[in-house]
Image 1 (cartoon, one colour):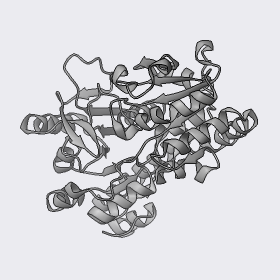
Image 2 (cartoon, rainbow, N blue to C red; image 1 turned 180 degrees about the vertical axis):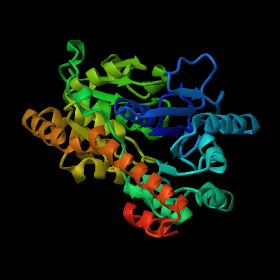
Image 3 (cartoon, rainbow, N blue to C red; image 1 turned 45 degrees about the horizontal axis):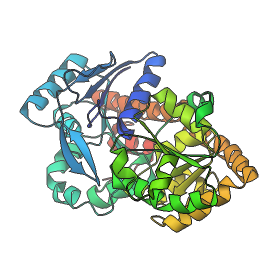
Length: 390
């Protein structure tokens, strides 16, 4: 199958959507499919052979973060050329409502289109305001996927229609087989995320850290991610700042090794999360997880069975839970065992197969419509995917 995938966000600025698309493309290529990914990227960015650059992106505030998007006449021309040259059997557009390549591809593409919705935002005024503009593009979509129930709810409430829920995927064995790094072991807490983005929750963790260090002064916090390290620790007493080690951006290999090494992984995110891929990666690596009780995080952690939850933005609750877990090796081992079993449902062997089934369904439906077969058609297609009518 010839598969075209559209990434809305800049390839050279790592994020959950980009990682999802990269791993999905790798999965399909391993199965023997032809895959091309169209993504914004700076001219000097080294790209995998299957990625086609649509040009440089511009930063735009979006859903509590800053997204690097690509839009305009030149981008539209590049989208049309990519679609023409690719002659794809199916187009898979991620975040088709964002003002980027996905929306342009929706307008320009012909044939079967699958769209994945990643965003969870129950009060998106921008999405509501843009409904009339988006509707013509969204009507061309053959099948909709949401990465979580909360992303599906955002779609339903703002744009109508429905979606089948297929979560983000992860290569479980890649994380499970990583070698721990000795210098990252022993009374360590891990955090991975953009440290200059408040919704990732590092300020909440920093507020909890003095309580944790007062009870367990040997504990270290390992922080991996982009941002200003000095600004991140300015709220800490000076004598405690040496207990925080900033690793900067880390490779995929080192991320896996970090998650395999720490005694506890903390995800203190405060909002704007529709899934929580870092939780899945941590569970895959066998890290005991402590996360804020966001709805999406609770779902990934099986409502607290595969990892513990604390009250969102409550630094005292975070500190209390972290201290209890750090002092209870048996509980941490139980979480490792439960998490390692639970996370298998997110492996690409399952997630990728589900997405491929959607592709096969929409391409079969398109072929049936082209042949004027009465058993096919949109109604039957949506029923087979378990989707409601628009």
